[in-house]
Length: 242
Length: 253
Image: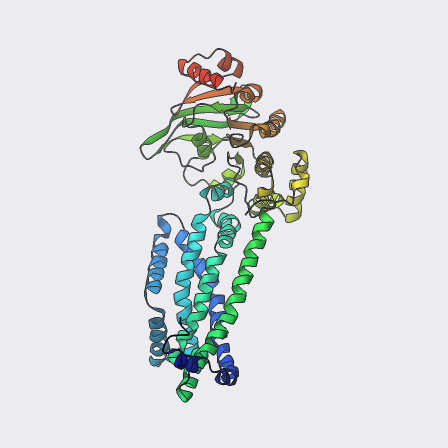
């Protein structure tokens, strides 16, 4: 049906030009390394930071109310603001302050923006994991004389994190794709590079190159996670129908 | 303080506990001597489990006091972690840690809470697992074991902390009938070894067999307390008699 639509020949010429694809691939691949650096650096900070935030939100008792409240305000705020706005505000705003001790690299502020937004998301994933571990597990640990922190560290968190590996991967893929937003700051990453090429030739095949590169990363990652989860399940419950 | 010439292991004095408007414990008084085995019987909801959870400080009490080995554990500012290290509890639903092997389940608390080295904790765990016929299950995960094996591991896990007092909360209620005996045999062995135990149970035959005293709980109070022969053969209270009749009718005695 698509192939018989009246615009199909023009569409095909615009997006599927093999010569352009081949010729632009090395250049866009070069730019894609900026995306890879962005999401790798960001993810390495996000995973522990989000876990810390989730743990802070789970602290019991009135003593920790201010900490819990701060964690909630942070999560609500950065899940609510569109990512592109956070990237713009930090990427253009912070260097514009003209303060010497503030880095003016837009790559740096792009990482900060992605970390702020995704830490808020990922902390909610961890929190769901923590709450899914039955309270009797913590009770059993405490009954043996472990402290709250020891029970959390040795009994609750290992189970919680295992359960949320698939949604963590989901957010990691979201992060990978959102690195394309950073192009709006003028950082030359894969999407920005394909826009530049498109402007030179008025052909859209370059977008397809960028799309190929993103997918080439996410699909193997998804299969790897499936394998990881399956291996863990096999080890714990041999002979059971999972 | 002594009871029957033995040192006192546990003293529960006028303990009250409510969940919202529901009064679960309404003035419990109970004393256990060292090496004494006391069974708590009574209908579901009579407060047996809550009493055990209170003694292990898993639930705060509303009024009264609890003294373990001469120390009041319900007073303010007591280090609950230190108290719990000396009191073992085994739950109806085992509550083993599913992400750890049997050996890791047993050695976690000795290493983290008692500060034993991995080697010392492992040696202690091996000794206990051998004693209870679980040595070959050392490196298995709990989900690969039968219910009876899981519950025996849970008992070993509690014993690895070398508790002065062991609380057992209906530990055979979640088991298939053919698996009950292997767990009860462990408790008999512990009783013979002089372990002080407070046991909530529905197994009347076992209670009669292993307990020095049996307490009948009814609506948050200990209604009757006596040696098993007396309580099972000639109960003084009408409520006790009714409860035992229902048990007999259900074929559990």
